Length: 253
Image (cartoon, rainbow, N blue to C red):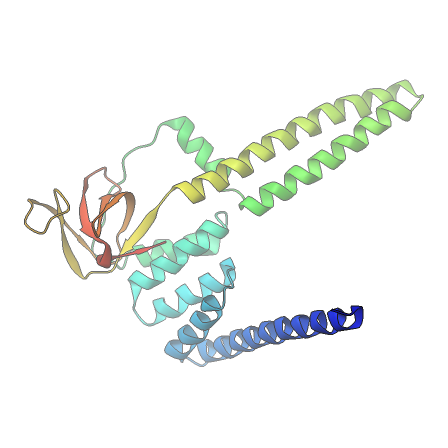
């Protein structure tokens, strides 16, 4: 393939991606206008098209949650608020709307108390998103290197001390930020949760319709996924109760 041919192919590919991106941006603009006009079903359909195109952003998921909330579809509202929260855990607007949506569902489950250090760690991790923790890490690392350079090149004692200790502190902060970023990423990837989408469903003692009934959950309840066997999920609800539900009754966050 000749060089100019390669350039043309690259240009056409970039033009295609740009057009695709512009198309998604147009859908977002249309969705926002539909939402403002009170056409919540249309807005949700357009936001879903953007999601289906591979785009993910907390603002997009938040808007989709708002559209479903306005339609009184609280289970889907909770699903999208939870997805938005995973991308931006420190966002107060997402937390507020999620809490309001949870007041609209039937199940009010008191969670098990957490150990204080777990509660503290989760609170720290949720201050920022994974990307923000990574950005803080990079910033602290670069600032620490600059402090080290100041220590090495300066001939003034006070500046050498400032450079040394700032380098030590900033590099330590960079390490902690990296650990927080990794922990937040690992938690997001390893923690499998879902929202119940059956109006009312009985949790079973084993992955079998004929097994013992344990308790009932309702649409919109969040559950932790523990295992998956033959079309059934082993789930745990917030109070620690465990049982089995059909895969078709749940939607993963």
